[in-house]
Length: 237
Image 1: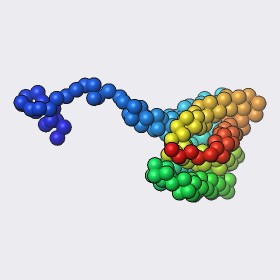
Image 2 (image 1 turned 180 degrees about the horizontal axis):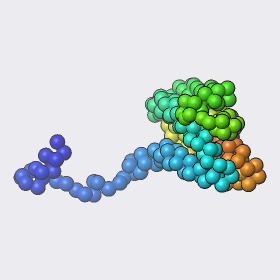
Image 3 (image 1 turned 90 degrees about the vertical axis):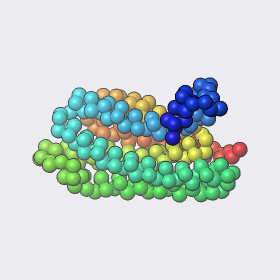
């Protein structure tokens, strides 16, 4: 259809006029880009954190620990997918009611979304705590050496799941109520700054265990920031 319009413009007499000024990025486009930037950063951060953790594991432990991290990463990625589902579902309801000026429904939807995310995070964390060896068997054929490292590593690292779903869901909420800077700040803090800093510093003090606890500590710190931002009064224009 669009091809026919363009062809008719150049080869037929018509009143249609193309103006390239209309193709410039306007305020609306910039707003759309800024709204989605936080979610985009979440996806980029997964790769960045993986690279950092891989490098630190190779520095402070053996290749077997790297194989264990592959299992952890796969499980955490699956939980992140659940986080996106919770966030996107809640965002649709919240943004609709925010646009309609219905503050009560916004708060109700926010409560349900964040409680669901928190309960889900605790649930997935408990699975990792209770069945670390089962997770190892799902993703690989573990050896005795893998078992000796894997259970402890999974239990430490997967503590981050308590707050991971909550933090990710919060970025969708802040986007929905047009608090784009807060949403971006949450994504940057948990994706680059706090995570990156702790992954680099904690192994110096705690060795390989510092690698495993870095991400849980980062998620906890970001969760404190999120709760602080949530306490601020909701403003609907």
